[in-house]
Length: 117
Image (cartoon, rainbow, N blue to C red; front, side, top):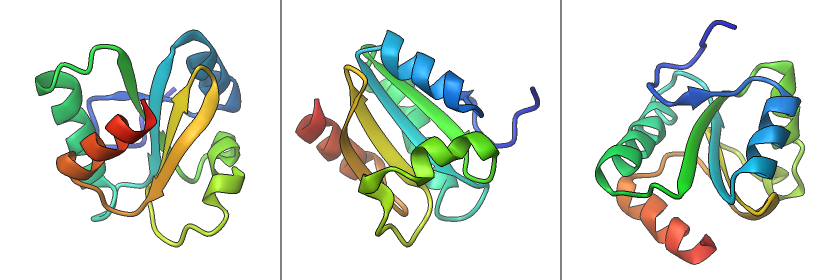
C-alpha cells in the first residue's frame, strides 16, 4: 500500500490496521491528517518524541484523513466538535483516553502524554 503522508512514522490506512494496533499495544497515539501546514509539524513532533525523548512504550502512528478507513477516527465522539486537522487520538489498552485537534508542538504533546498515560 503506498504511503500518503510525508512522515517516517508507521502509516495505517484501514480500520482493521487501527483496531489491530490499539489491541496489540498498550499505548498508541494516532495523528489523522493531511500533508498540510497544520499536520506536518505534528508528524515532526511525533518523530522527535519517538526518536529523542525515549517514549519506547508508546506507538506513534499517522493516518491519512481522506482514506475510507479513517472513519474509525473521524467518527469518534471525541472528534465530533473538532474543526482543524490533524485529529490526534490517544489510546490506552484499546480505549480512547484523550484527543486533540489542530497543530501541536512537542511540548503540548508531551503534556497530553503525561495527562493520558
